[in-house]
Length: 416
Image 1 (cartoon, rainbow, N blue to C red):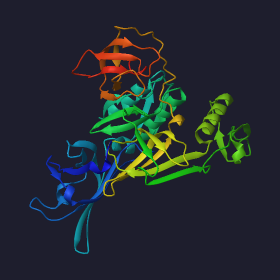
Image 2 (image 1 turned 30 degrees about the vertical axis):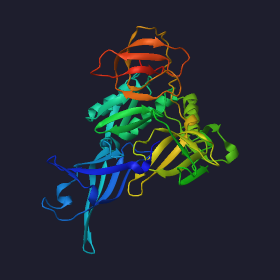
Image 3 (image 1 turned 45 degrees about the vertical axis):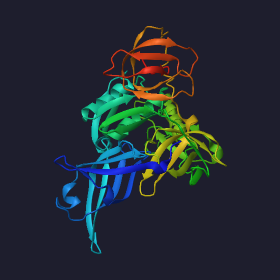
Image 4 (image 1 turned 135 degrees about the horizontal axis):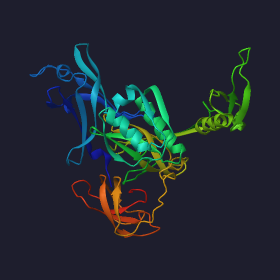
């Protein structure tokens, strides 16, 4: 059983000339977090800005320099939790004490903050569209287990690229695709389906959890959408349709103006999409626990509390407070998310001996539901065994060990 107290972090600063300094003994207020509606992970901490032979820390770590957080377990090897470039550089002096405050973001920050105009032709698939955006900005795409459906024409004018990627993923879900999350690993970006983690942690109230908050709110709900047409001579747009949602919560009305070249049926469809996105109460579960560095946004966990339905939940945001040794997670029920791509059913009858392209992700030691899993990169493989109806029905063996180490049982849809 994992003992969170046996985890230990190290904080590393890399200077512009690529020299590394371990400042672990000089830092305080260290946190790293992955917010729900942002692409980039954020690191913040304060360093004692004392004079040293090489100068003050603030003279070594400038905006644009890299910060890395490493962790080890029970004295074992160091693993990287997260890294980011310094975005905010803030040395200060007060009451004869010199301090240096740092805020850094991972490789996704440039995408999150940059605008561009983009166009994708009809039938462009989700993975291709997002890959093009990442490549244009010099971001390497690693594992991709997200949705991959065909889209209609997509045009984005002067929009932030982070918002564009989230919109593409959202549209893919509407077309039957799965829910997915973007996560950085060193300087590579992985796009993973929710619940992609092989190890699922179980947490119980009173045993591990120190705080549990459960909230349901109808604030911000939309329960009715009115579709408006072209303005008349008096400047008043006529109401062409009224689409009702969950009006038993009250009337929370939103107006939708039909476009010049948009049919009324298309406008009604858009109104229904607004209700699907904004027309239900928002339920959030927040828990505080001892910190486990490997738990990240998009992971699946299992909860058991006295007043929240026991079951599987997905991490939609997480804050690791290193000083306090805690992590705070915002969770949503796994049942609200899709991790099976209904838009891309497996319409081929695979047989033993077929050569396939493994998409990257988890492979398991057996075909059973509780089998332990390991990660492997994408690559070519051969189907060695098939167990129809099993949780992980296909046994793949890589054909190129230099590219992929997959050698075990995998899920349907994990290869093509």
